[in-house]
Amino acid sequence: MHSIILTAERKDGIALQQRLLNASSSFKEISPYVKEDLLSGEGRFKEVQFVFSTWYMPQLSAEEIKEYLPSLKAVFYAAGTVKYFAKPFLASGVRVFSAAKANGAAVAEFVAAQVLLANKGYFQAQKACKSVLWRLAFQRARRFSEMRKGNYGARIGLIGCGSVGEEVVRLLKPYRLEILVYDPYLPEEKCQALGVTSVGLEYLFENCDVISNHLPDIPSTRGLIDYGLLNRLHDYSTFINTGRGAQVVEADLARLLRKRPSICALLDVSRHEPPFPWSPLLRRRNLFLSPHIAGSLGDESDRLVEFITCAYEDYCAGREPKGEIDLDKLELMA
Image (cartoon, rainbow, N blue to C red; front, side, top):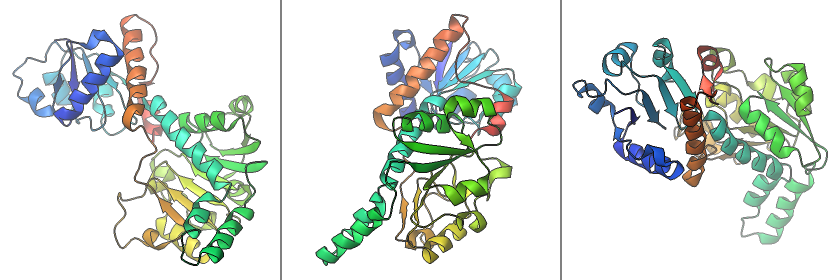
């Protein structure tokens, strides 16, 4: 036994096994296990060199890795962030590969779609249309769209321009949009290559029609987007968050949306998921919530498996695999 699937629930492992089999016949002998199997395995996993996993990968301590997986060389994670489990593996000399970049493609598609619809005033307009006062509702809904700039010459602001932000830029390239970016880690030559303009955070909020947050969840970014920034949004602008809920002071966002009803917010993430029933977010008609669906769902998961399969095959062939995460990258991951 040289490779196993390690999963929080065996049914997740079986689903991953089937997707791996569809991607490559080299995985036909692989079997799924949960953490309890590992800890009660009486040494039968000591020859395992490769672990595959996906969402809800079990957490192991460095001591458990050393005792139960002493031959382990690499973890191949067919999902997004590895932040919550990777450090003990990296500290044990185990290489970790993530399909975060492939998952980011799904998030970027979601964001690009929201940007284009937001510039048309779609979200508030479609809600305003639903009324028994049908003529009045129709005219009111039209006004939400007529006050927007549309998708010709609009300014889009990206907070953070890592793998997701870069893909958003690429997807929006065919449209006549100006893209501004706030990212302290993005070098000027990269901005030029992407065709974006690097600006300060306050300038971004003051001058963009749509702003999308892609910051990593690190201590310095938590609570960064507060009322002082949000109140710089101009009328009829839209704020999108598919990053992490912790970056936004939600009470401040709810306050802004109450005071300035022309502004729209699209949140796929929140500080607590789902938001508590007493959250002020749930009482704002100009705030639209989705249940953390921007990442890969359904057959989009095949893209994650294909990415991690390529990483495994490159590793075995002595090529440099894509998606490797080291301790420095781990600190900046979402």
